[in-house]
Amino acid sequence: MNIKEQYKILEFGEYGDERGNLVVAEGNGKDIPFAIKRVFYMYGSDATVIRGQHANRKTEFVLINVSGTSKVKVDNGYETDVIELNKPRMGLYLPTMLWKDMYDFSADSVLLCLASEHYDGSEYIRDYNEYLKEVRSVAASEEKEQDKYCLLYTSDAADEARSVD
Image 1: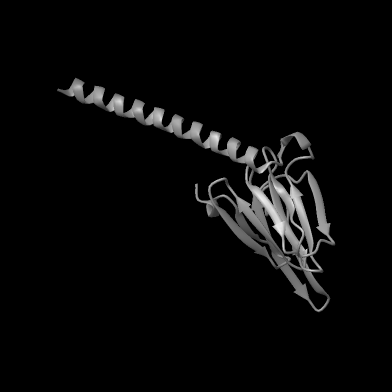
Image 2: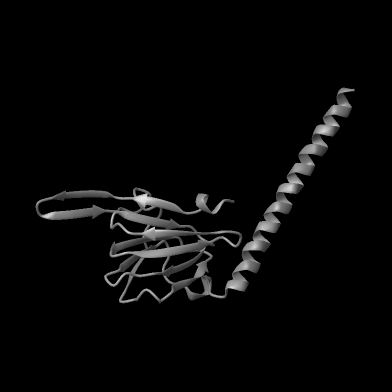
């Protein structure tokens, strides 16, 4: 699958007047595509620090730079893409099984993370080679399953053709 089809850029409603601006992001599928079970944020990281460096088997995330900017490199085991988070009304939705690196933090960066699950260290994949093995074995088994159905379909079609003759 194309990596750009796996993640999604979200735009939240922004409301402002002479008092300032307000950005609204609601969970349970309204703005955030899941029920929010955990919230955390990162700040005080400089441009040389790389955060994340893991994939999750169960947890989905939405990342929002509520202040400053940062970059997120996403990797599906076959291709990568880099997304710059540079507006507080912009979110990045990351499904399960995408490797993520957050980096190039501006001095004023505050990266807010919304998670679909409570923390469970056992569902994190922190070794990139292990991630590649796991993600590629899943893709290979899905391909085998698809080939099996194609074979069954082709076999059924051949049987029907023979019965028509």
